[in-house]
Image 1 (tube, rainbow, N blue to C red):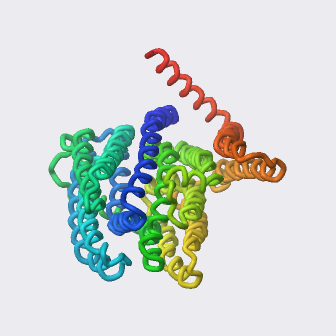
Image 2 (tube, rainbow, N blue to C red):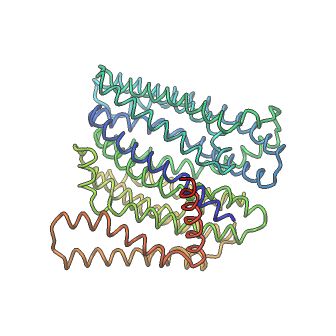
Image 3 (tube, one colour):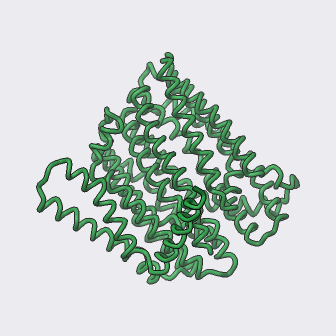
Amino acid sequence: MSTNRIIKNSLVMYLVIIGTALIGIYNSRIILSTLGIEDFGIYSLIYGIVLLFSFMNSSMSGTVQRFLSVSIGKKDNKELSEYICSAILIHFIIAIFVLLIGKTIGEWFLTNKIVISIDKKNVGYWVYQIALLSFFLQILSTPAQALLTAQEKMGFTSIINSITCLGKLISILIITKIKPENSLVLFCLFCLLFSCIQIITFYIISGIIHKTSYSLDFKKFKELAKFATWSLFGDLSSVAKSQGSAVILNLFFGAPINAAFGIANQVCGNLNNVSNMVTKAANPQIIMFYNSKNKEKAYKLVAQLSKITFSLLFTISLPFLLMTNEILILWLKKVPEHSIQFTQLSIITSLIEVCSIPLMVLSKATGKIKLYQTIVGGILLLNIPISYFVLLITKIPESIYFVFIANSIFATISRLLILKKTARLSLPYFLSQVYLKIFLLIIIIGTYIFVFNYFFKINNFMTYINYSIIVPLLSFMCTVFFVLSKNEKTKLLTILNFQYKKIHGGI
């Protein structure tokens, strides 16, 4: 039953996320060509600086979803209402705090440390103000998004986000047409407008206003805040790795390098959105199973998600790994320096990390996150100082990704060892069901690519066909035959057949 619901939710989200990814990819091309490399780098960097403050909001987002899912699982509407009320108040406090930090420390850092050409300083200042206000609004929408996820209505979230993404495309097309003097500032104002529309839509669709009791329970408030405090370390480290690294790269190489970093993040972000839709659809059920004393189902679901999300990301990433140069040229026409290497290394990092996402959910489901967040968060937080010293020695931008890769491996090992203790996760079961199977998948595909390149000297057209169609298709087939269990294959075919008959019958 749970697997059926997960697959149904994933299928509903699939087309929406694919559409959003395509729009996002086209957005980047138009934004880069319209704004230019320097302005695009400033845009990526400044929005990244603002996102540095988001670790507090990220901690609360996962926390709220966890408690709402537990309440929904117990069918306790009163408790659900009290948690929603506490969540809205906490997010309002976080939003005010972020605004204050952004207007003080953030502005000082932007003015005194960030490397931006003198003639772009004023543009950078106004982009920062708009980005800060936009993020303020996004924080306020988090409780509504968490409620939709806890209710397993992820399709609504995907549709709203895709409309926002479409709004950015419309905005940049308008700017391309009218060609204003400050294109970047106007584009950011349009983004702010769509952030306002987004928060209003989330609150209306979720019905959160009608579900809250408007009477604060200080016990629930304290419980949410305490849980989120320990989540802080992991979320801080995650944000610091991505957005803090953008700042470090800027300090060493200036704004143009941030354009390449932004391109790599855009590619990986869209690929991850497609693979993570399965995990997002299953998160509430992992929490519900574990807290309803049905832990074996939770362990099984975590293992299934880990190998499926890796296999999906691996399959759709193969063309981007094997034809990075060709794809970026086709996509952007003018490719910023270092974009190719950044994109390839970023994809490899994502492949290492994607298996850990269900493990993070399992950790939150236990409620015992102090040890997990302290150790794993501490390891990931080392990305920043190590990256700084490695760049100081090598002066090679790509070296920062090798730090990411090594750090991600150590963090994954730590997660497994900690969850063995806190969640009683069986390591032999997880290693045999997940890592052994994905290792076999990698070996098969790697061997095929090696044999093809070594023995077959054919024209570029056939190479493109092989890398863009045959290799991903082979990866998909290997996933079905070697990664999925017999029971998983049966359930997948059952759901796909049901959806086909439903669509065919509707026609």
